Length: 278
Image (cartoon, rainbow, N blue to C red; front, side, top):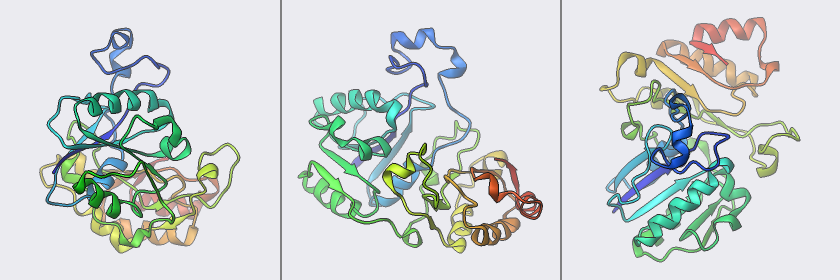
């Protein structure tokens, strides 16, 4: 089976954007029409959950537009709220050609009705609990309208991300997720709405995965890592052990963490482990 995993994107504050060939794109400065710095994590993770014998292409719209005429049997569209109108238009275009469309991500989880009658299947919640059933249904071309995750993923069971599928147009193609969720319930944060509990990936698995990058990448691409965690340092004991585990890898990395994580002691260890900005 030929599938594409598409991370839908558009420049913020330009709601009429519909790809770089659209009329709206002509009014946007070129620097805002791309997002080439660091690769997201979600697409390479979704691809890793799919059968290895499938032909899989990843498309990050931050660096290239989707070709709606691409030769695929199915597409997985991942979208956030500000990209949802673009995702819905793409879903319509693919379905018009008979391509199966599966939509998931933050916005479909919070508002699945937005994609009702626009996609063949909507994934609500985390992908890992529903992917096995979804894959079997897709092979039979008998998808359910909604796949509701009734549990959460065990991060110790996650496979190595498909770094081999990332477009090398990114300056830093190595995006990764060490933890998931956040222990805090801040009223302004979307995580409070989806109630994703804080979980940690086993540190040996983190080291394994960060060593799995393609040897064809440039020195700089192999050197830089972006941890897309919402609050990497929330568990201080785990964060300390993680930093110690990262020291031998000699990578430079960036992340997000709450300010209470930073103490003189932790800052020195983060620097030793390769942290260069937060």
